[in-house]
Length: 193
Image (cartoon, rainbow, N blue to C red; front, side):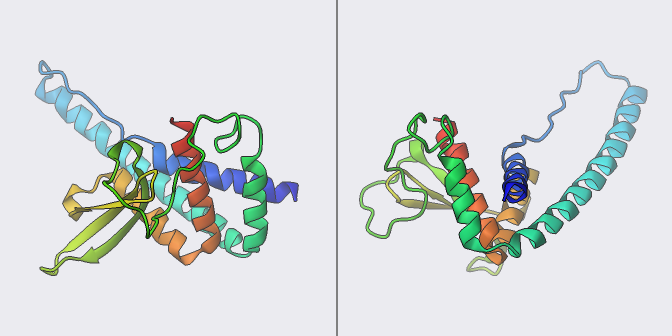
């Protein structure tokens, strides 16, 4: 049981890192020489190659963990996530600052206007629009369970957006991952209040 808890915590951490890591930003000095720019470009290409290799390795490790996760009974995953959510000071517990009635999934009977101040990412899907062009549809849910959808073209998608979409795609194929993603979404949302 302890190993299962460690495994789920580790997997939750991996998913949380994928959701929260911002892309690295570099600012170039206007006084840079062409030789320095060439060296920076070369260094950036090498760093990008290393980053891609690291990302490929992390995705392979994640896939291995997902395969293990798929073999665990959903009821066990739910019980462990429920137990972890009761740890004092953890988001979702009495010591947390979140609203107790916050919706994390769409509510069919929700009325009123969407509240962007309480918006939380619920899902990302890829589909073709009416013109046959590929788009990514982001679905947000507010505290009342109302939804808002936003479309982005592949060109508008950042690296982090693509990683988040990949995680949502994997979670559609693995019920236990979806439970874990939903738990991490709640922790991230409730912890950020």
